[in-house]
Length: 305
Image (cartoon, rainbow, N blue to C red; front, side, top):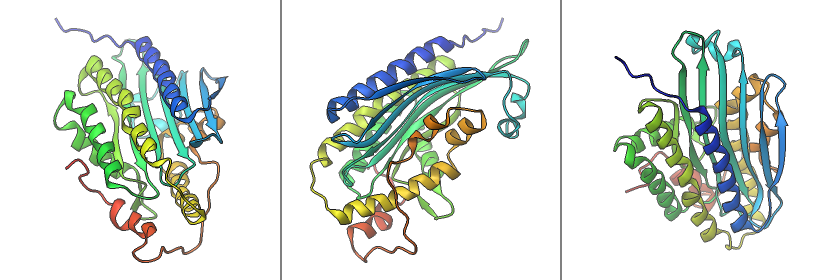
């Protein structure tokens, strides 16, 4: 007799709410400021709570959002690539965060963990986890890149030696601006449609990734936040933030899914930086720290070794 796998949606939701709390507490501790919270409801079903820390000591803008949305059917744009989801009810829940520091020597960071399930009467549910985290420096630092990737590797190791290199490569390929022919940052982890370990272990892996984020990011903030910077570094930071905006509005799956399913626009676009600039035909000075970013750091490489 086959064993029916139990999909514990409530356990996932409880974890995600606790993760939002713990990440906000960690960021508040290093910043000294406080998040403001706004709860919202989605007319078609579900809602969430959005938290933003803005114009504070360390972070120019940090947003940490929880959302749980559901409905009777997905839009055609979402089922075109996954026809087996057509006609099923769905639930999607997750925590997504983006951190834009004041200091250009502190990298921007993004993290996300999420769960999706589609159900129909008399059918086995279709479900998966997704998420990961990535780092977007403006001025590269090898120590930071190594720490970031070693933290990511440590989160993966209990679940198989092959996971980190596979998901690191997926991250390098996903966070890539095809129209610029360059990566968005120095990568990290990315996974989607993840159910290969069964529900319990896939959920445990997702928790390992979510729980490792602060350990990966906060030491970098502590090391770089006190470094002095001037107008040159600030203007370069704003220029490179333009790449972040371009990716999120053109390629990011979470942004597109949220907008297509009638999510709360203000929360979905929380990921965008407060200030950004574009400059036509910009070229950094040869052999400058600004040139080093694209010539050395924005390359797919093994940061662990």
